[in-house]
Length: 120
Image 1 (cartoon, helix red, strand yellow):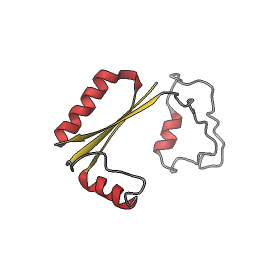
Image 2 (tube, rainbow, N blue to C red; image 1 turned 90 degrees about the vertical axis):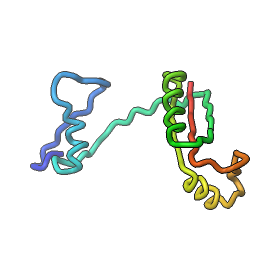
Image 3 (tube, rainbow, N blue to C red; image 1 turned 45 degrees about the horizontal axis):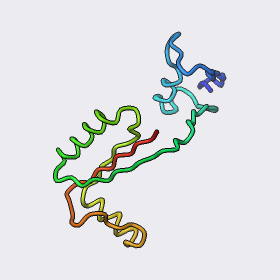
Image 4 (cartoon, rainbow, N blue to C red; image 1 turned 60 degrees about the vertical axis):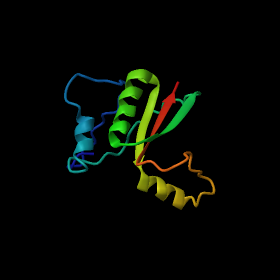
């Protein structure tokens, strides 16, 4: 809805429309200053049947970056996510879960950890 009360209908079945300005993203970027979004369509892809997760320890942030570079280069389209956390974050997770459900997967602490998820 536009500021003057006019309803602007931009719902379409096209996934990509290059016929003019992308008003949808203009509205989203305007954070409510250009109008109010009253309807939206969300694309929900089906869950993938095969998921794999690797959790690796890294000695430095440069190693974390190398994990990302190798994951992107080797895994291509099946790469779903790459996340990292530092030792303080790992300790916070372990403390929060009080080590009942979450077990520390390594023999010793490392400065950084990376998680790589694939889906196909």
